[in-house]
Image (cartoon, rainbow, N blue to C red):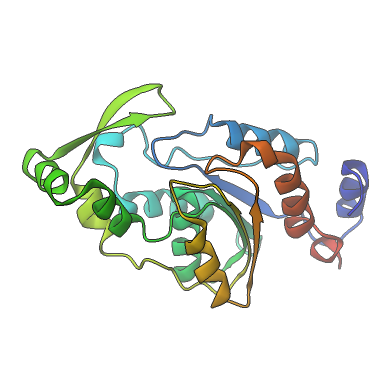
Length: 235
């Protein structure tokens, strides 16, 4: 893969436009997260506008998987017909990207960072029966919202709705998965299990935690090569 200038020159001389790329942030995060901003700046250097929707649409309390999938659909459907769309997702955003791609074959490629496979089931297991019952009874669960820097509450509908979806979405598109070997939020074994059963997936395990912020540069290099290759921009 060449420099940013070489990538842009290659694209300008090709028959196709550069791909549209949508970034999906994680749970209790926002479009202003560190990884989202990092990738937006790097893609901007290549002349690509990275779209980063607010998956909660300013209504975190009523968050559901179904609602977030609807946000992704509205964003991707704005792309002119025939243009390619790829998804990048972090944590819950990675799970959502996989889930959306499994239902929308028009999505071209995926980059998943610590994808939160088994999201709803792992939440219930981590909380335990008593806290889950309290969440159900009261209707609310307090969680720290990293995007807003304060504790917010999320409704029990997130747990109920999440159980309607598969632990491991079965998409067929080519995908990169990045996972930290020291991730205590989403065990890397989940990505290993998924990749072992999907020949279309390439998994890289980094010496990192769930945030992966210490490996932003190598993730960017691999993402750039994967999503914006000479093959992608060739006639």
